[in-house]
Every structure is written in C-alpha cells, then in structure tokens.
Image 1: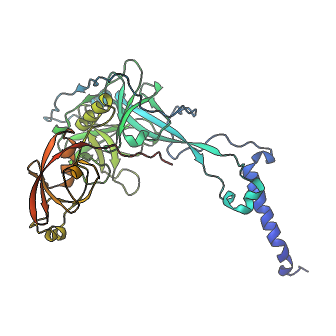
Image 2: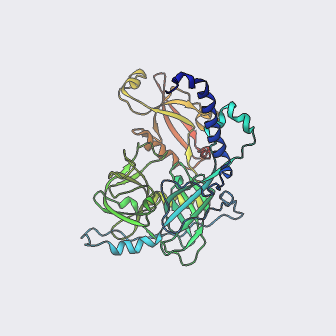
Image 3: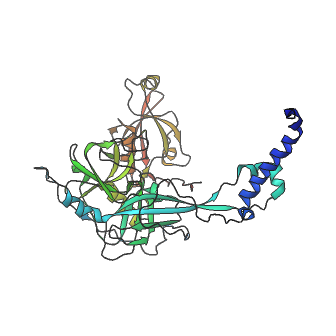
Length: 418
C-alpha cells in the first residue's frame, strides 16, 4: 500500500534545495563532472563565411594622432552614365566594381553575464565574491569599399563602432587588419585604411546625376554567405526625415540590401559607385524592397575631411529647434506654419551670444525662408565656422534681424556599447 502523499511533504524542501545547489555547482565548476569547460565563445547569429576571423584580441583600434596632416586621397571619377540603351548583362559592371568591395569583420570583448542564481544571497554564501568573471567575444559583419590606392576604405560607422579589432578581407583572398582613420556617427560613415599592395579601386560617379529609374546594383556580404550582387532601380533620391542619422540625404533603391550589406557599394550599370549602402526599411529584418544609400558625393566629402582634418567640420547655431504646426503658428501670430520655434538655446553657444531666446521663431537664415528644418540644418552645417549669418526672428509678434557668428558643431558624445 502506498504511503499518503502528505507524508513526503517534509522531504520536498530539502530535495529541491539540494537539486538547485547541484545545478549551480556543476555550472560554475564543470571540472567536477570530469569534463572541461567549452573554451569556444558563443558565435553570433550571423556567421562569417569561409575563413574565420582570429579570436585573438588586439588593443582597441583608435585613430592615430598624426604628427603631419594627411594629404587628401586621390579618388577616381567616373565618366557620366550613358542612358541610351540598357545592357543585356551587367557582368562588365560587376567585374569592374566587385574587386573593390571588401568584407569587414569587427570584434570586441564583453563581460559575460553571470548565472542569474548568483544574484541570490542564499547561493552567493557558498561561493562568496570570488566567482571568476567570464569574457566572450562579439563579432559583427559588414562590407566596405576601397576608394583610393592609398588603401582608404569607406564603410558605415555602425559596422565598426566600438570594435577592438577590425579585419578586412578582399575578394582575391587577402586579409589584413585595418586602422581606423576617423568616423562620423552623424552621417553613419567611417574611414579605414589597409596596408596592401596593388589594391583594386572603385570609380566614383557624380551622385547628383543619379535619376529615378536608373538601374542599381548592390554589392556586399549579406548574412556572411560571401560576396553577392543584387539588382534593382533607383526609386527615389534626397530621402530624409527617416530618423536614421542627424544628416540625411539618402538614395533609395529596391535592390535587395540585407544584414551584412551595410557599408557595401551601390553601383550603376557601368560599375561606378553612386552610394554606400547603409540601411533598410523592414518589418521582418530582411529586405522588403526599400533600401537606403549615402550618396557618393557626400561620402567623398566626409572621406576627405576625416583624412585631412581627423573630424568632420560643420557649422552650428547652438539651438534646439521644433517644427511649427498650424496650432503653434497661430499662437505666435503667424499666418502659415513656416519656420521653426527655438525650444532651447545652448549656454555660451553662437545663438546664446547673439541674444536668441527660447520661444523665438526663426523664419529665415541668410534671407532664405525656412521651409524644411532638416534642409536648413544641412545648409547651416555647410557654412564654415566663423562666418556670419543674418537671421530673421519673430519675438512677441515683432520681427527682428539678428547677425550671428556660426560656431563649429561639437562632436557627439559616443558611448561604447555594453
């Protein structure tokens, strides 16, 4: 006859505690079972193709402080695109551009989270505070484009941001570590440099000549499967208000751009670079026919500044602006919602020194009406620090003319990812 279930009740608590303690001990000290802990760090969801990047970690790669200013890189300019007749195959264009598109493997070391039971004081009393810290390596995958015989490589800031080591793999099988020349998070561009001989170099097209309907090819290393090429058309230019970067002027394409394509090349039907692939609009994480690339002209300008200056120099007013809606415009006595309202002024900044105040409505800059806040922001960034700008401001229903000396936009505060 079976004993009643309640007769086992006094033994359930000790048995449960014993099982949990055994699990913790075996997890923290696997040698107790006669097996060794797996030294291989967990792999990310995106695996690198072919040859794996080495797991040894060198010190964090930082942009060197050059004693002498670097000369501007020499870029190869492509001839204007011919639109008279489309080719049957794009083999020539791909063979011209693809060797200059590289795979980028970046890695960093982070502290591995300890077992959740270790946060319980009951279990910590058995181990104290001497539980050894564990480390793991995180790797990310992206693409880049060689744009100069000097070894300069354009890629996205988010591909190499926070990396301890960056490895570049060429299509011809060569691999090398890369030096970070500079990054610009506000445009999501970065410049690397590799030291190899006889480098393939891509030609840059004039991205202002890109037209909706042009054939576009995206070259990169999606999902780590190896270099691939996808085809589509240019579906829009001058895209902004996407909330991706502080400064946006994207080329939109329906050529498939997938994870790992970031930093790769968007080329035209003749194999010339028209943009650097940087983002996609997707609800699933994969390509849904809406991809964005940074125009080649903008990328070339940022490349030159990062190489020669070590940073991107932009004009700055030192205000926090908010776009006007009809309700706000009516409250300020304006007939139409044009201009921006100054929501905040940076203490000691150019606007503060010029006497601007929160609540002022900025109607025009350099006698040009403000119709789009982001376009105006880009126009201000193009003004050299130290130059003066006339501003038209409405304060308390009165129109004022203010002269402001443009300052240099401070670099954004970067925080290493956790």
